[in-house]
Image 1 (tube, rainbow, N blue to C red):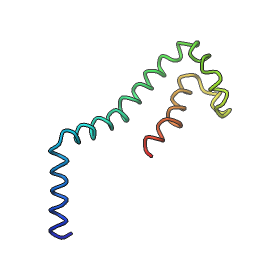
Image 2: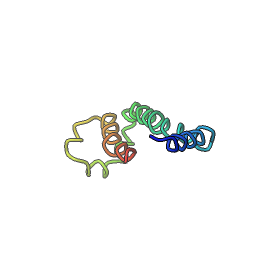
Image 3: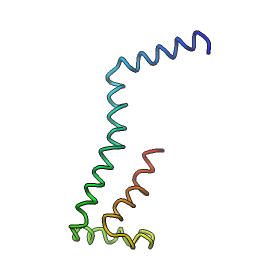
Length: 92
C-alpha cells in the first residue's frame, strides 16, 4: 500500500468517525436487527402459548407451511418461522 492509498483510507475513516449522521445508523440498525427483534420474538413466543385464539387466526397460513411444522407447539412454531423465513433476508 503506497502513501496516497494510506492517506485516502485515513481521510475516509476520519470522515466516518467524525459524523454523527453516519455513526448513529451504523450502531442503531445492527443493534435493532440483532437484539431488539429477536428479543421481541422470544417475548412473543413466551405469550403465544397462552392465547389459543391467536393460533386459530393464523390457521390458513399454518396450512401452507410444510407438514413437518405441525409437530411443533405454537411457541416453537413461531421461533422456527422467524428463523427460517424472517431472519435470512437480513443478511442479503
